[in-house]
View 1 (cartoon, helix red, strand yellow):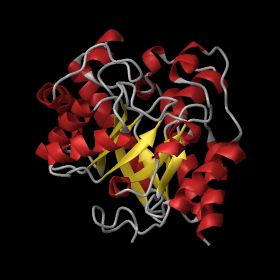
View 2 (cartoon, rainbow, N blue to C red; view 1 turned 180 degrees about the horizontal axis):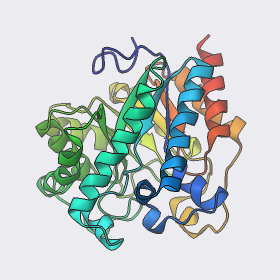
View 3 (tube, rainbow, N blue to C red; view 1 turned 90 degrees about the vertical axis):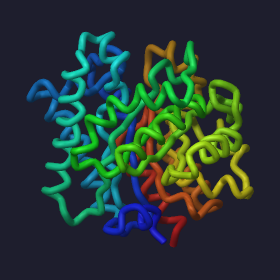
View 4 (cartoon, rainbow, N blue to C red; view 1 turned 180 degrees about the vertical axis):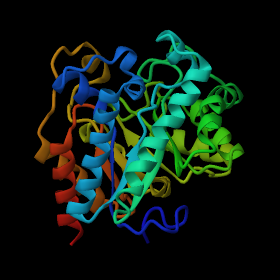
Length: 313
């Protein structure tokens, strides 16, 4: 059964490709300044919109070339109140930019109706994903993230995707907010080099805690912003693993602390990364969403798609 079949009956694809490495590609490879690691300000200029649209079209083309479905991720990972305020954006301005992001994605999808395509509204953490200074309670997280989700609720978005989350309570709040607005939701945790969340929880415990607090409402869970070497050892055949259905990996083996200090991009080995992800998919056939995070570009994505297709034959 295709991964999205239960949530999105119109999506018929065995493999779905997701890409969230745009920001590092823009900064290091294209020389684009992104204060606060925010890409949504690009929506404010014609040149910026062209850049964003280019990434969306590249993903559509990759899906067409490889026979895979595509998850288009919005450039709204840090388009929330606290992070937006630090860049001078008001809540109303953020609301409009969140909506503009989805509208751009919807236009690209409408022009390419032959490719199974999901529009994902990308939400990030309120605080530093790698070292959150203060952890919210689930109720606080629900109130906080409801602001961004409410701005997205009446757009053409298909799913809310909480990426690079570091602790269960924030994930619980995001899920509760998405459920309140009647939207499907995916949760993606990040892990350190030991396979644990930055706040110390194991993936198993984090997923179990979130599911218990939300009646298992999340469509599924993912891991992102980590290299396969960081989490491969904790993936096992236990029942909790059935809830992980996506891996969106970093190109680099560096720790988060090392990446934060890096002045040059470590793009790793695209072929090796692709083979590692394909191996994970072969070991866990229920994993159908694969893609690239920090340090990756379309070279990595093409290799990932090819390797995944080869191992599924």
